[in-house]
Length: 404
Image (tube, rainbow, N blue to C red; front, side, top):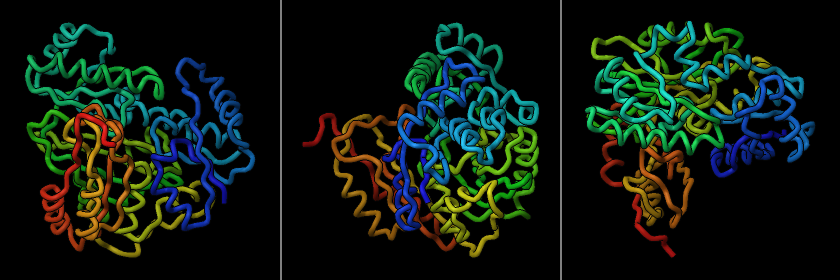
């Protein structure tokens, strides 16, 4: 089997490891930006430019684990005559502005407004105070990985936060096109995620995640831990029903999904986003689904829309994902010490994306993780206890100068 992966090889370490174990040949390519191109010309443009880099007819499948390349994936699948997802559905689910405005979604999202990045911060502050009040969350409309997502508690902190999000919009422009800045009322309840697949119109939830630590009072939204269990239908009816409304209403089918939710102070559930892909660059769901249920997310992805897929768990377990980022901007140092500690703690899988000496941003400007570790746990309680231990013992160190 030969698979074209839209994205960068260095972002797909886990999928490469999987391909090696399954005898799959993976080839990587980065498609062109669709910004400024008429929609009628999207398929022709993408097929021509990607076709200049690789021979499309040689591939058995085309995948991507990046939000920004989901449309490209389906355009190329259509070009090959393969089953593909509805482009409007994919476009809606990869753009926060379109998502929040969709009739199937708008009643279940937090109150919000949108502003152009070029808006004067004083004008933007006035609009936020009039429409929302404080606290609020600012975010790019086409961001990912919590990049640029900032909580603002007071009017005097607004300008700095607005400029920070504007900067991230600029960083994302080349790869994801222009965006708006979304300001939404901050919801102070717990944040959770649900992963699963929609197959032939049936929404199947498979994983339930709690994002930790709870970010009360913190300025950014980069949670480091994720405690995961198999989705419990008896306890998760509210999530199941909302996802059936949203996914069915938007028109997504034969696709993975990753949905994020948060409760407000009154206990009402709101949906934050619903991405049409395997989450965490593929690695998160692949490892967590394997540990918790015994299922193979990558294998399911390759069969969607082509052949029947079995979504019945073969085991029930808990898991912990820990996502490492730097506390301060700087050049990475002593990563090997952190990796050694994770091995001592019996990590199931360790994925190292960056090397010593490389410069990294701290949240909220980071758009990539440094290191991710996955642990198999007997219960969710033991996963939370392990999270506390990892936080105490393992850190990402940076220095102001590159390490030789």
